[in-house]
Image (tube, helix red, strand yellow):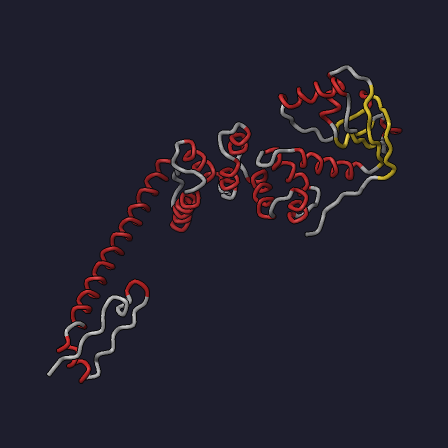
Length: 303
C-alpha cells in the first residue's frame, strides 16, 4: 500500500512565541473532561509537545496561524501563560490548512460526525476517496459513505447522531437514501423500534418500491408514514410466509411421490416387467431427493 505523507513545510525551527499572537484557523471540538486533565498535566509537568504554527503572514498580519496544538494553546491561555513553545514553519495557508485537517483527523474518534466532517473537508480540498482512506486507515467505501452522510443527510439525521439518538452506522445507511421523505420515515421507524441496522435494507426496499409505484402511476401526493411502512412490512411478511407455506406444501408432495417410487422400485415383479420393456432406468435426482441414497436395489423376481 502506498504511504501517504505530507511534507509541505520548510524552514522548521523551534521558538517561544507569544500566546496572544496566535490565530486558530481550523478549530475543533474536544472532550471537556479529557481536556481538563490535559490542562492539569501541563500545569504540573509543563509542555511536552510543541504546537505548530505558520509564520508566512506574521509580517503582514502580526499573527502566527496555528496548524496543530489548539488544546495546548487553550491550556496555556487558561493557565495565564504568556508564551508557548512552538515549531514555526513557513508555508501557504492552504498547505497549513491541509496539514491541520490531517492532524485533527488523527486525533478525532472515528464514528462521529466530527470525524465525518473532517473527511468531507479533505475531500473538498481535492483529495480523492482513495487518498483519504489511506490517511484515515479506513476502506474507500467507509470514506465514501461518511462523506455522503455529510452531503446528503437531513439536519435531523445529523443532529440525531451528534445527540446519540441514532448510531452513526444507521445514519450512514439512511443517508444513502437521497429522498428526504424516505430518510424521515426511516428515522421515525427507528425511533419506534420498527427499523434497525439489521432490517434496514428490507425496510428501505419496501419504501422505495411503494414510492416508485406511485411515480409510475402518476399518483397524487400522499404522505408516506411509519404507519404505512408498518402495513407494507406486514403485507411483505405475509407474502413471504405464504410463499414459505406453499414451498413446504410442494416439498411434502415431492416426498410423497418419492415414497411411492420407493415402494414401486422395491417390487421385484414390477421391476422385471420394466426391465423387459427397458423402462427400469431410475430418475437422476441429486441432494436430499437422490433416490439412490434412499433405496436398496430391488431383488429380481424368481421363477
